[in-house]
Amino acid sequence: MSRSAILPRSAPFDAEDIAGLNAIFARASRDQRAWLAGFLAGIDAAQREGPAPVAAPVARTKLTILYATESGHAEALAHAAQRDAARRGFAPRVLDMADASVSALAESPNLLVIASTWGEGEAPQRAAPFLRALAADDAPRLDGVRFAVLALGDSAYAQFCAIGKRIDARLEGLGGIRIAARVDCDLDYEAPAASFVDRVLAALAPPTDAGSVIHVDFHRTDGAGTAKPERVDAPVAALHPIGSSWSERETWHLEIDLTGSGLDYQPGDALALMPRNDPALAESILAATGLAGDQAVRDALIRERDLATLTAKLIADYGAITGDDRVLALAADEAARAQFIPGRQVIDLLEAFPHRLTGADLLRLLRKLSVRYYSIASSQKIVGEAAHLAIAKVAYESAGRSRTGVASGLVAGRLAVGDTLPVRVKANPQFRLPEDPDAPIVMIGAGTGIAPYRAFLQEREAIGARGRSWLMFGHRRFTHDFLYQLDIQAWLKSGVLGEVDLAFSRDQPEKRYVQHLLWERRDALRARLAEGATLYLCGDARSMARDVDATLVRILGQPALDELITAGRYRKDVY
Ligand SMILES: Cc1cc2nc3c(=O)[nH]c(=O)nc-3n(C[C@H](O)[C@H](O)[C@H](O)COP(=O)(O)OP(=O)(O)OC[C@H]3O[C@@H](n4cnc5c(N)ncnc54)[C@H](O)[C@@H]3O)c2cc1C
Ligand SMILES: Cc1cc2nc3c(=O)[nH]c(=O)nc-3n(C[C@H](O)[C@H](O)[C@H](O)COP(=O)(O)O)c2cc1C
Image (cartoon, rainbow, N blue to C red; front, side, top):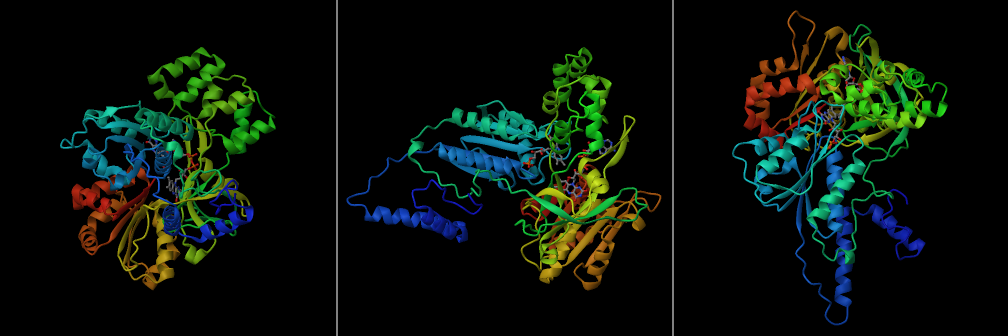
């Protein structure tokens, strides 16, 4: 079925009619399709002879599906659960935690929560005010609310699924009744999430006569029924370092050619890029496991497997495959693991405890390679069918080895113009310019956090926006790390950018960061917010975002900051 096809080939029409109807539906908006569905049902009812049979009213079981997301997985799962629940006769509604109030939960008899964890054990940013309210001493009781929590995370993080765990405990603490044990999902979340939702819906079971309901899924956009955006192999059109060659943090400007791909994006969106591993690392792993020369396994290692991340589960699995008592002892000893894992990767484990493996065992041992996200640094109104990215090279030494990041190492070392990369657009509706082009914006960013602001400013330039734009940018050194300096200077000159404040941390004896700029300019910030400005923050989540948040709380107070978040006027894209 083509991407725009809505009626399946099995629909009770001729092939020609199906094609004709699909052509109309493809052009129609969702509202038009919904109108048509209602209209046809109405005509049918009116033309029926005699009184139309009236279905016995069925009180459908209410189900609230509440999600907290940063990059959209929890949201997509929530909508899939909603479709599943509707099919089974529930009356489900989906709520983004960013738009929900805790008091409304008390009125939900059944609650399914799907929440991811970000930063270092933190909540998705737009969900933070809700979670603060849920944790507060005066949070309403949830006695009798039947709930289940699905936690999304990544076991490579120390605070695995921390937010889901916290919500699960708190709902119980407030009197909720847990109807299914929480499930903590790792990166391969699809299958465990689907079976969890299945169990929860069965436990809540409102079995009505769902069999007679024809479920029309207007969200469905492709034949497989998945809501995942499409991935394409797109060529590299340009690639060069930005910043000077003396920079302590190499950053690369990568242009991806999207001609003919059909991929579109908005300023604020990210590009998901599937990297390839360093062949040298794949070969070290093959050598360590006695598989040197196995071309099929080598290819799978390079393209499909995470060759780096060492998790407790991987150590336990390696112990189980090899039967090595030392590995099993390490897997069983939390303190020993906490000593061994930091700074080490899979290759360190394999070389410390060498064993011959079969190709199948090796591939089963390793997690699947995951995409890397990059904020798009361009507007299609300026660059057309292309996407620009700014990628900082991850390179460090640990446990006696030099290591490079998978994707950034590829971009900074092994990629060339003309090579292709599998990419898809990751929409980021939370990080958009204000609809009103005359509204002021304040953009705070450090390092590659400049990327989406380049997209914003290109867009504002293209549409002739008159809203005042203010950039606060930080990096290490003015002479080496002033990323996109020429663009910024040109925008300052043309007025697209009203003002710029810069903080270069290593240009003077004392460290100077964007939060220092913010504090110095706090009166101007308050004034701009009073004029209706939207505030943006992009870049490093660990230190920069925390320090900026703490400074904003100091300047505005937590309640005022929460109000800005809830109103969509403080938007973050931090990683
Ligand atoms: C929405 C979003 C937007 C993003 N936008 C951008 C962007 O515009 N530009 C950009 O450059 N990145 C961006 N990132 C980050 C990007 O996705 C990757 O995480 C980053 O490039 C690293 O990927 P990698 O494959 O090169 O490194 P990986 O192979 O993933 O390695 C990174 C890991 O190496 C380890 N590590 C790194 N340094 C050290 C050290 N000194 N000591 C010990 N261990 C260390 C850490 O475990 C770290 O997680 C974004 C992320 C998100 C989620
Ligand atoms: C920058 C970053 C930080 C993350 N931090 C954590 C973490 O501390 N704990 C965890 O379990 N998972 C962490 N994850 C993994 C996410 O929770 C996981 O990718 C999840 O599927 C995202 O779901 P979402 O798209 O609904 O936000 C992190 C992911 C990224 C990209």
